[in-house]
Image (cartoon, rainbow, N blue to C red; front, side):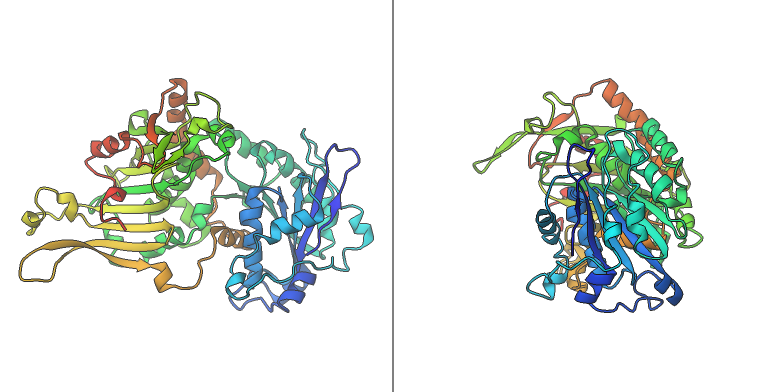
Length: 547
């Protein structure tokens, strides 16, 4: 792996364009010939396309945390598992000041992925630049990250990428602040698009702060790209259990007939982290937990869960059946907000959200939120979809919990006493950590008496599938390369999502509603329990027998 450092003469700080790895050196020295084509692995292309086309992957913001922790490890894992095409090149573009050795150490330290399960050490990543990147080409490896919107941004990527081959397919990953999305896309669209292949751009959230800003961002992006070229990524849609949600429902007869208001009492989507902002409060305070987690991650999972049966698994058929447009706009009365406060436990002190030096004093930004949403259609009328997301809680988890209705005229009602919730069947999809699917059922405890017990039929992925589960970014990067859009967000989905949350968010901020404080490391504010009780349900993750 070789890196190029470039200093642009008219720019005040060092700018780096990094040649990271390519099939011409990296592949041959580490793994040998791929032999990828129509055999089921890699991106399916014909033999002629393999020989005549190349894939260029450009990471804009190559020195950032997302690139370091997720994007480069995902690309390396795809390469290592033979999922990338035969001719590919990865470039990085960044403004951070660092030398070649510092960048190499930064990236190679995160490329462990699944290699360390086969080797005791990571293979040598210091390879020479391929011969086709000659001195003339290297002279043009320069660019600048502008403070103003200049169409010349990325103009030199055109020369850099063209050196890779005759037919150039180009994938740009924008791992950058949203305020410069349009600047980069303008330059990609005007100066760096492929003339004889495809050009696609992956855009990370946040996609605006409300309906207005999101719509303006979409309008600006579409001045330079078509909707089919824009891949709005939500990495939760690439997680294994989320991907398995539709398989579980549509390929198992035991579940599909139950997937409606007739049998389901409530659906709960729960996200919790056991740590606070930890120095990221400056970014987080501008968005809050509702925009950061609920409006995108949890809402997209809800849409997949509640969608009608699609005609096929084609991307447009799946996205057409999502239920966002059938949902009622969220009301402030159906929302509870909280913020974690300082707490001492076992001799250790935990800071409050406002103790973070990057957070403004007196901030009212919620670090916790619970909400009840409803879908106006025949399948889901009256079923509460409860969302809960928070930071600095007692545990780390992300899961979907489906609570079924009570059995009518249950013959064993007296064995459960007055707490019928103890007899409620529940299907749980644990997205993270320790991926699992389990179904809670009632059964008899062995013995001469009639004592009932609530037990789990458990599919624990680590036990059933010992092979390491690929990271969500691996699946989504591979889909973007293949042009598969099913797990990416379409512009009308984005509009519908913001339409649900924007009125409530504006009311919340205009009224300056103070969040309910909860101790760092607790289960969250008490108000969340009252919200669930309002709809005659209880949070499933609070049971003493929770797995």
